[in-house]
Amino acid sequence: MHIDYSAQSEKAYRDNPTYAALAEQYDDVDRRIARIENGIERSDGLPLAALKLRRSGLREDLARHLRKSESGCCNCGKNCAG
Image (cartoon, rainbow, N blue to C red; front, side, top):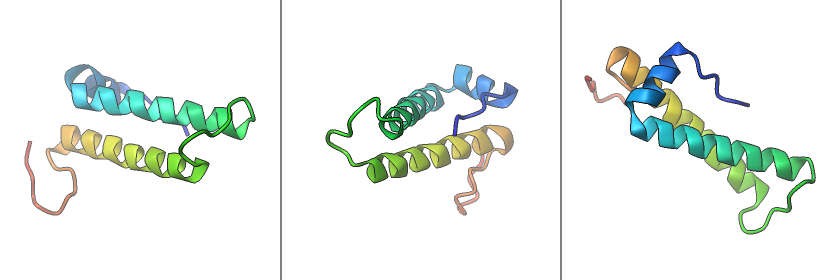
């Protein structure tokens, strides 16, 4: 699943270097998974399942950053404010 870089995420991408780095990591892992699943690349090192878990974690981190930039809270349960 490709992350949709909507207007909000584009703003986060420009204004937040952490978000930008996470988005690049997500895209890299997502492309690698696609290459492995299509037989273009061999899985050397991390198994495919571990790559998928990493992608899922990055997706959650990106969503958390977007929520925090939108409302000031990342839904961590600690009532954080931006």
